[in-house]
Length: 117
Image 1: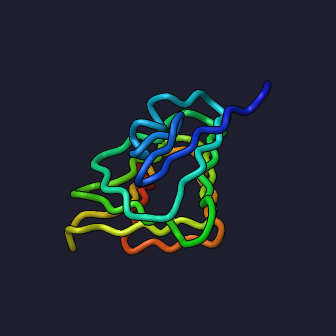
Image 2: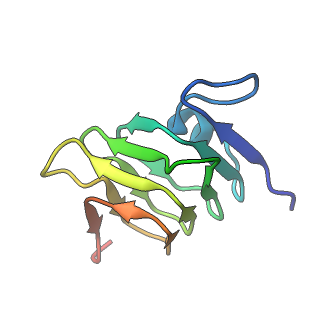
């Protein structure tokens, strides 16, 4: 199966998305989401399509800033070169409820793993 590449930029070009949520919604399993530098504010973004890859594009580390709970991961996906932060000290930037996510060269400010789910 051919992998689809979806681009995200803070100031989007033709064919690029301006939010990670919009890119995830358009993605199919095994898609690659290439994220440009900048801060992307996301709220309860479900990451549930297997095989998705999220990678930093260009110079600088993209930041996914959770407003409340951020990413809700329930599938085996991978992240490379991305920073995850939360604007709420009691809400996690990333919640893992399933799957087996892989993070390489990433930074996470707040993480919650549901071991009962």
